[in-house]
Length: 314
Figure 1 (cartoon, rainbow, N blue to C red):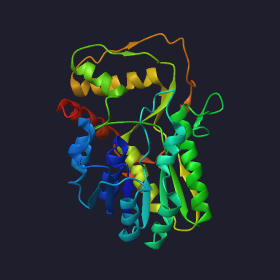
Figure 2: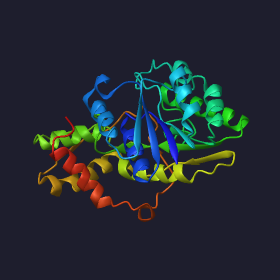
Figure 3: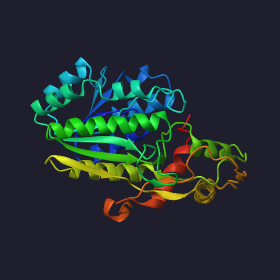
Figure 4: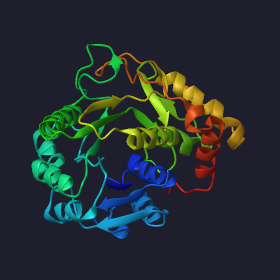
């Protein structure tokens, strides 16, 4: 199947494109610029690696909804549009521009859908987040975590309205907390880099219950979901579940798995958590069938350890 994929330079986007290509699909990955144009090293590396992926074609210099993107959609003959890109500028800030983000995420959507249908397309997969209001399971009624989460929820509502109006098939793929090789320097990277430097990192929020998932498993679930999305109009959603546990328990799990692989003590300090500005619990709900997907948990931990041991994280 010919697939057009936006947001390919992101952490999860890189893994999703790689898995789609490995499944035999012909993927055209959209990039705002060429690999060397990105300011951060890990994004440059992901974009460069994808240009070497078998059955993956890069499309440089276009963004969702602009004229170049519309031409690409109209002429490409794509059977599936995967809209993974999203406006994430300062996404952790309480001043994040949710309204502006929705406008960017859905730019010229009616025209995009019309062009997609002109080329014979029927199926769309939109990426969502467990931090959107109403997604996953958790405490406090599953509210929007932040203005960014709010923007993702509104984006999904806009897509659902127009896809339903135009009789298209829409699948929503809801992401929890992925971790793995080629991620930005977030929590797991912080822990690992400290362990490799013979330091003891700390976990400041050990009581939050979150859903951390190996990105390689997440990518296999994504590829299966995208491949099997029916052409008939309608809406389907999947919320793949990873390690649903407290952040303290996940931190200890990470240490336990990497200790023998690094041959290091991998000690960690679990601090006392007294403040809970975020909902205490937020997790996904659909348990992946790892065996049916051909995913090996031990091999995934090996891959994570090898990535950091080789110093590829920068």
